[in-house]
Length: 117
Image (cartoon, rainbow, N blue to C red; front, side, top):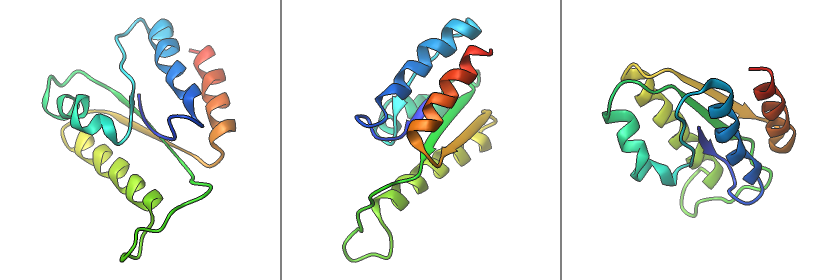
């Protein structure tokens, strides 16, 4: 599970990993993006070709412009997520990207969906 979300406001995303593991009986990992890109992210792209990836992104309520550019920090984070998903897919790794327009409601809906597995 790759969560390009807010580690504080969206902390409930971390429980999805344990529930996914419990329901599927598969080994799972969880990482907050983009920081995991420098550790487990390298293994995901270059290691054994046996992973499947759930990438969570979300709409940004209050964004911050990057000085001297035409984009925001939210734009940068989305670009990192899309780039990571593209590289994983190009290497033959299955990726399901879910973009949450309402992060809180979306995480609740995902938790409920996990109960149906």
